[in-house]
Every structure is written in structure tokens, then in C-alpha cells.
Amino acid sequence: MRRVLASFFLLMLFLLIILPSILARSCSIPAPKQKPAVILEKTPIISPAGELVLKVFRHDLQAREEMPLEEYLVGVVAAEMPAAFAPEALKAQAVSARTYTVKQMFAFGGSGCSQNPGADICTDPEHCQAWAGEKDLLAKWAPEEAAQNYEKIRTAVRETAGQVLTYEEDYIEAVFHAHCGGHTENSEEVWSTALPYLRGKNCSFCAGSRWSQTEYIFTQEKFLQALGKHFPALPVAAAGEQLLQAAERSASGRIKSLRLAGETISGKEIRQALDLPSTRFFWTYHDQEIKFTVHGYGHGVGLCQYGAGGMAQAGKTYPEILQYYYTDVELVTIKAP
Image (cartoon, rainbow, N blue to C red; front, top):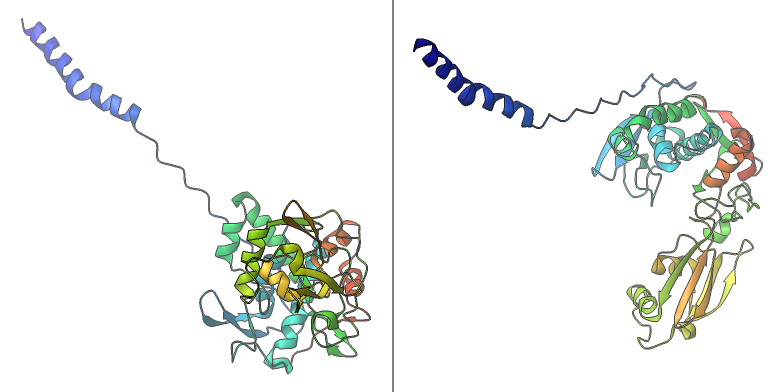
């Protein structure tokens, strides 16, 4: 009898306590594995001019922050050019961005950021240069590529540390853009000043890449709606074909001005109204629609970033790239102010 009771007790113990515990463990969802932290290489970048500190206005934080020049440039190159580009293109971008920055710095006689008094430069790409911090870069890059991308960009900045472009011993306006669409532009066609080192150049190196040719189709309604936001005086019932008339173009084929409903407007204005990537565009009409074919992205002056990528892929060095897009410039090393 005792043996039967003992067996019954053991059976109940198994059924009520041990078995549920086993089942609970087998059905539980395993805790997700944490992604390994990305370790970024941060060996200090030494400049021949010593550590130059600049005041950067962070437009995302609406605050001013001090940064070492070369460390700031890592964020600029990472934001302005794809990390997948060849190293020589990244170096060309680093030199252009450094020249652009140094020319604005108070320490080198620059006037600083015109929109943010007291700052050398800002991070608003619509006004100065784009810039990205580590948090933004890690969010943009795949975890398995982040460390390699970051080191590649730091190497481009490190191997060009202190190098800038001059024309007749003055720092140049080292402007750049994403894609020229086949031909860069003279500075006076976009801004008011003709600069001898910002001359339009034929550029086949960006051909066949992103932004070489894009198309945008508008119905009559959407076309008028887009224009109406910027030009409220337009006749609402007008047909798209009657609105747009013959354009005046620059030597590179960009729209300088055109006639819109009898009024003359600039290429910049029509580009902004229709949100087109470039003023190097053409249009056709078909079945109550208007199609814009656009070549390039950006203002088209100075360094063509996709062109630099193509030149680097073809074996050109960064000095060759820079001296192609900026006419008669010298590559020099800055001295401490």
C-alpha cells in the first residue's frame, strides 16, 4: 500500500509541478540577441597646420558647437558623397570641403556663416555644407558596413589633411554639386560673379549614373497646381502648353529664363516650383500631359561629385580630379593662422 501511495505521490508531483515547468520552458520565446555594437575607428587626424577649431552652427539642434576642422570634415564627406565611391573621389571631396570651410573661417579672414552670426559655418546643406554626426551615419549605413565606411572616409580626410585649393594665392570658392548632367556651368550663369577658376567643362565621367537623366510627368491640373503655389497670379484655366514658351539657355544647356503665361521667370524659379533636380531640362507635351526630361542634380558649378566618382574609377588621382573641375588652381597646404 505504501508503495502505491508513493508512486501516486510521485506521479502527481510530476503532473502538477515538473511537467508544467518543462512545457513552460519549451514554449517560452527566446530573448532577442542584441546586435553587436559598431566600433568606429577614431584615431585623431593630425593636420600640418595643427588643430584648427571652428564654430559650427548645428541646424538640427539650433545650437553652436566647436569642432576640430578635420573631424568636422569627416562628417561633411560622409554626408556629401556616398561612401561607396572610390577613395580618390572621397579625397577630392575632402579637399573641396576643406577649402570651402577655410575660406569662411574667421581665423583665416573669412566672414563666417551669413545666416548664423558668430558661427564659421552651418550644417544646413541649403546654405553651407551638409554634415552628419555618428548617430546619423550609423542609422544610414548597414551595421556590417558602418565601420568600414567610416574608416574609408576618415582615411580620405587623413591623407589630405591640411590640403586646400588656391587661385593666385587666395582660397577659392570650392563649390560642388551632385551631378552636372554632362557639362558643368560657368559661375556667372548661376550667381552674379564670373570666377576664372569656375569655368564650365564637358564632363562625360558622370554619364550613365544616377541623375544622368530623370523624367517628371505632370497632368495639366498638377502642373498648374505646382506653379500656383509660387505664382498665384497665373490663370487657373490656362493650358500647360500655352503657359510655357521658348527658353533662354546657357552655353551648357541650362534654363536661364523662360516665358510663363506671358511673364519672364528664371530657371531657378521654375525648378523650385516643380521640384526638379536641375535647370538643365527639356519638356514635351502629349495627351494633356507635360513631360520634363532633366539632366543632372544641383547648380552644376565646380566639382561634379558623380563625375569625380567616374574619374576615380577610371584611375585618376584626386589632384587630377580637382584640377579638372577647378581651372588653373593650385593644391597647397594651409598654414596656421
